[in-house]
Length: 391
Image 1 (spheres, rainbow, N blue to C red):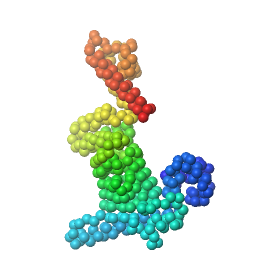
Image 2 (tube, one colour):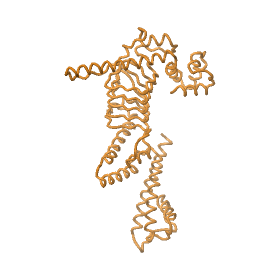
Image 3 (tube, rainbow, N blue to C red):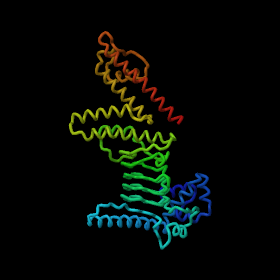
Image 4 (cartoon, one colour):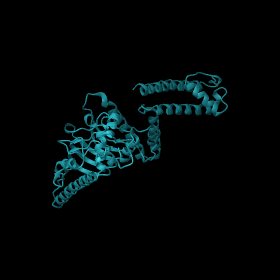
């Protein structure tokens, strides 16, 4: 939730005309009451976000970023010195927020003394809602921090282990995340937003992942583009590459996430093999095969996928009827061939057009094949609609 979104929400509730920090900290309780009526957790979430807009919040944010940079630079220096001495031992950066002091006070003491908080945490260094966009951290262990509702968008996080950290509801939009590990026994990690991210070579257990994480599934049309090796820039879906999945929970609420990631990885491996093929003939054959796989084995959560592939089948058969019009009665133009294909696909039966068995039996076999496919696709469409309506 960004500052502008908070402002618009305040305006919707009848509070406007000043900065969001003035509205919030000068409120006599009316705004918080309205927010709680709307959503009982919303006021607490907004408080954790809006404090970073205050002068004290901006100072704490600067101290946090400087602390992270200091730890990274310190470890880099140690590793460079070791390398010069011929010692090939690689030290990880330890970012322990218990060590962060602001004006000789702990992070919580400094923050809570200078900015009003309705809820104060003990045992956590309270960084909830912190805007850490565009940050780059590699080969590090991050310890002892409450990061709930924080924003890591557009960041690079490589070989990171979170220990005793709460990462509920964090935004990892458009990130490049690899070799990420969250110690589930000492923290929590669910409802995170991975839209547009590349998630590479990480371990994801069901306990870590959480049942409601926002994974933007690849659209049917984007999948078709990928199958044809078309440029994959400007994506908005979550791109999973070589994830290690650990299904360590008997609860089936994670089943859809695991099935989707497995399906996505297997499909992308097929597509990548075509894009890397040097032989033009083999490359073309693989692309055609990938396209066939795309229109027939998509994970059918999408009603659009069912409709589009059904229309594609109708189109292909209409071309065959138009091309071999001499073995059917009364196909004089493409429009009539298309109309005949729709009739056969929807199992309406023959009208004024039908196979001419005196000339060939091929027409009968083609019609029979489209009828069989039509039965399957109509049943598939009803099944998908049923899941959409009654899920």
